[in-house]
Structures are given as C-alpha cells and as structure tokens.
Length: 296
Ligand code: SAH
Image (cartoon, rainbow, N blue to C red; front, side, top):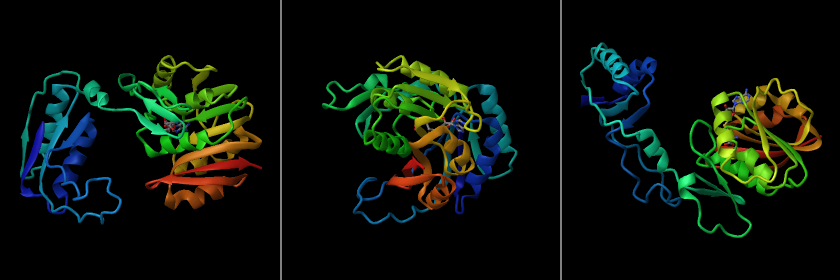
C-alpha cells in the first residue's frame, strides 16, 4: 500500500504515528518514495563536508506485506489514526521481489577474502585471496556489514593453521568457513537462531572447505565444550559485556578472542568487561569496532 500526507511531515509526527500503527502488522518492506537527496560529492566522498539536513517533505511510503489480509488490516489501522493521510491499497505482482532484491547483492572483499553470493562469483580472484560463497538468506553475514568485514580482516592476520575455533553467533557461517579455509583443525559454528544455522549449513555446502565446520544451535551462555584456541564473537556490545565470563571460559590461556559488533562509545566498557584478556589490536570501520584479544 502507499501512505501519503498532503502536508509536510514537519517534525516526523506522521512518520512516527504510521510506524507505530504498522508495528503489529509486520510489513516486509517500507520504502520511502521521496528519498533524501544525495550529498553533492556523492555518498562516499570523504573530503566533502557533512551534508545539511534535507528539508522535511510530505510523508510518502510504500509498505509491502506478504498477503492482502495483513495489508488491509494495516491500512485500517492507519486510517483509524484519524490523521490527514491517504492510504492506497496497491497490488504488486508477486514476482518474487524478495529474491530479486537479494540478487542485487554483489561480492565484497575483506582481508584475504572475497565474500560472494552464488550469482556474483569472481572469475579470477587474485592470488592468495579466498572466495567464500554465501547464499544471502536468513543468516547475518553476507560481508555487507562493517563488522563481518572487520572480523575477516582481523582473521586474515592471525595464525589459524592447526587451531581449534569456535564461531559464537555464526549467522551465515561466514567466519567459521573463513577459519576452515585458513587452516583451522576443528571448527564449530553456533548460533541461537535455528534459521541461521540452517542457512549456514546450506552455504557451507557451496564451498570447498579443507576442514568441515560443525554447525549447531546453542546459546553463548550455555556452550558445553572444551576451551578452544580461537573464539570469534561478532555479537553486540551489550551481549559481549553480559557474556564476558562464558566467553573467557571458551578460550584456552594464551588463546585468541576476536570481538566485533560494538561501537566506539562501547569499546571501553567491552574491554573492561573482558578483563581476562589483553588487547592485541583495535580496528574500526565507520562507527563499528573490532578487537583482537589475548587470553591471559
Ligand atoms: N558471525 C556472523 C554473524 C554475526 S551477527 C558475522 O560476523 O557476520 C550475530 C549473530 O549472533 C546472529 O546470527 C545472532 O542470531 C547470534 N546471537 C545473538 N545472540 C546470541 C546468543 N545469546 N547466543 C548465540 N548466538 C547469538
């Protein structure tokens, strides 16, 4: 459906109200039909000054649902707000737009890796660069997030030959597969989300892994395994802080913990919580951070 306001959404009040009304109806996608203008130098010009806030516009959103009944319930909820909004029920052709939008994902490079979807495999990767094939689906970790790239770059500089590895919060399985490719001896990838594990197993089948990765569902607070040489934990800052003790128990003395998923302002408290480790290196991309830590 398409929701529009005639008036300019001056302080975002229309947007807030519509977002709240949509909340219970789980839209599959919300597209702003009036996207903000690109800054003059383009998005990636680091020398350009930060662009000024774009002027407010009327609200114009296209909201997509999996079925007509959900759409109609959501449209009624928006109409019941009693705001000056027009709600148009539109039927989009069901031509698998989810799959098509995923198809626009392309290969990305990080450290000694290229992470590629099956439809964008590099024809001739540079020498020493490993290609990891990830089927973008339920698992986080297509390489399009800074934290995945930070972990892959950190891993590229670490010794994995013969090491045992646990990927805690494996998502798509990308880091576990990277560890296998770098020569780890035993690799386990776990995630609390069973859909992610299913996707990771599917992606692993698309790769030639020197050591198979054991994927299973488990919680960071209850991992019943012997400590390993390297633990990879791309979680969140809050989760790393809460799980500092179990994470320390998963790493052998002298072993390595690679953490990411936290932001600059969280770094100090993440490092303070992980007090059984020394910091070996710190990296960041945009606001996202990663640390390589050594267990005392
Ligand atoms: N390792 C991947 C995915 C990171 S996203 C990468 O680097 O790209 C973080 C993952 O941690 C998600 O898949 C999420 O399901 C998982 N996760 C969140 N809380 C968890 C917990 N308590 N125990 C195990 N996994 C958890």
